[in-house]
Image (cartoon, rainbow, N blue to C red; front, side):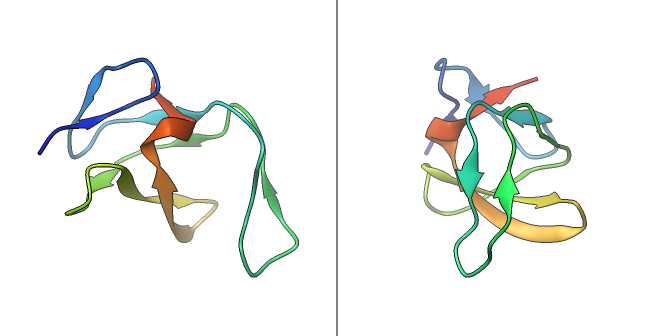
Length: 69
């Protein structure tokens, strides 16, 4: 399975991505701002999701909301 960012670029383990729009965090009152960078991403079994760490918090993001940096 191939994971692709919002522009159609292929993603792989260890890539750096940035968020393209403000995202509300479920279960919290915080927001991930547009332009936030996530380094060292990990691909999951689902090609539409990636694991990453933002501000020392582990998160799962949809690939449609990130672009390869």
